[in-house]
Image (cartoon, rainbow, N blue to C red; front, side, top):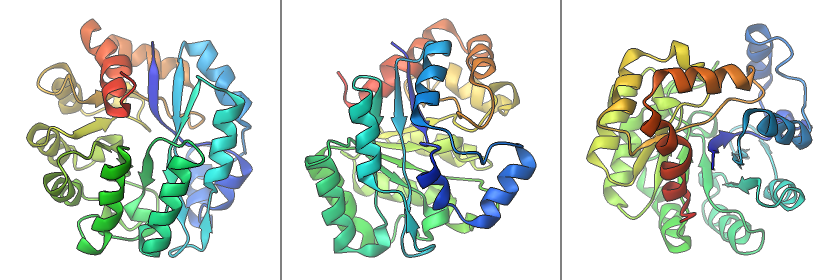
Length: 270
């Protein structure tokens, strides 16, 4: 079984909540990337490259941008393709109790199975104690968090340092977490956290594997074989070369861990 853990539903609703500066920069870097793609395109891409399950990640930027992708839309995509998609919820931590209520609704009523947080777009420090009730709710619901960390076009990077996630991981050891994108350029801090905290993983989304820093491959092949998570970056660039490059860079036993054993443990599929 192959699982990719970090896919945004690149639909019109998702793109409509992105800030204009980000869409313009995406279009300059990846022409055509800002064109909406129906969820059926993702399923076809998965079939072509042999991916069994994709995890869908929405974003809620109600406070910082006045925009969000609805959790109901994500749940509907999952219902359309049972067994192929796992949906995470998006809530805005800065909404306080309303965020906690929406997360509980998304998990208990809609069947979503994790939480996506994007500190750089949502503009919050993960380790701020005012957000701890939200993390306590994640522990209660037994769901993981995927954190955007590191670089983002035009974003406030100060919120994306993985050292803040390390603080949350220390205070919430039962809470499973994924540091997205290996937190580039702070991948050494990311690896420190993954080594120190049993509950923290990292993914390689938004990378063509051949351009990953050598240290990322080194850690994936050695001391963090049990923490690395695979994902393409559909539809940012073609998925097939991503799979082929990853297969050429990591050990065969790491391949299975990265797209089956580790994500299954992170998502509690087994």
